[in-house]
Image (tube, rainbow, N blue to C red; front, side):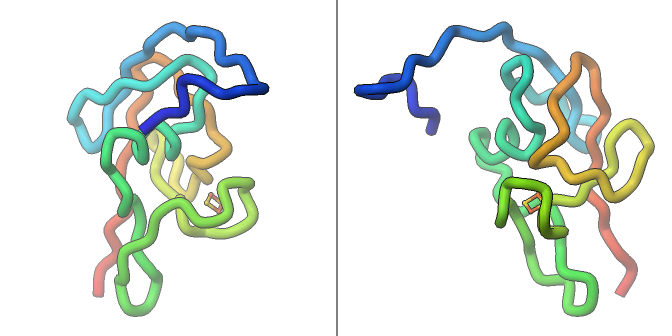
Length: 98
Ligand code: FES
């Protein structure tokens, strides 16, 4: 669900880029944060709590919590709400051992 029309703001059309979530191809718009693109496509649980493994998703969306941590291009614990999509990027969920 994207906001496409707004009475005050103007949204310019952006180029689509492809990246991978756990090996599956996913699309988003250039310059968009990874977590936002995933949320828009229905991936709401992108992380889990450290102790009880409860599902976690976007919470603050400004890089101040740990709800959106994912592995990006082999780098663990990247805050995907502030990391912008790049073409061909490899994004992985971080499953922790119980
Ligand atoms: S949602 Fe809080 S740091 Fe990303």
